[in-house]
Length: 212
Image 1 (tube, rainbow, N blue to C red):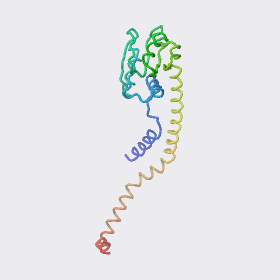
Image 2: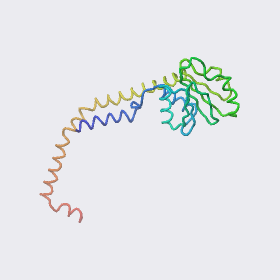
Image 3: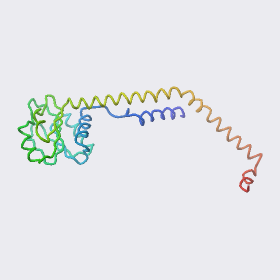
Image 4: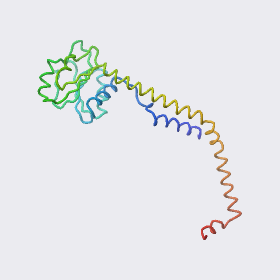
């Protein structure tokens, strides 16, 4: 049992001192990471998800878990962008652009300089590239997600390196730990035996010490 406890201690060190326990960099998690990076904290912010397929469901779950207020539409629904929408994420199988500069220009004019961040994770792309030329409208796509994912992979490699150092330290110290664990009950028993002998030989020693 003591061996298991020592092993668990090192596992806990790996998890607490590195990010090894974090989830994989899926499209949804990377899109969420990008949204937080460009738009700030998402708690209470309105996010419009365009696409109700598998990826759309995963995106909704990820953003909702981050505290965002989700509006979700399919690629066939009319595009209604609320005045207080902060982020749009598109993920439909449409073969044509659903969001173009022609669509966005009047919307952005009504928003009165309120910034809008659009993340297009669809293949082919749901958003025309010229949307990015509209003032206060910022477009990101899979290339930007790949950049975020690359940063994530780089950080994971560093965390793996840190974990390997912790494990190497555990391997190096393991014989010492095993010896400590093996003799700990013996030392404890010896200590208790000495205390018993001391009490028998000097039964009033504690009283004398208290009286000075």
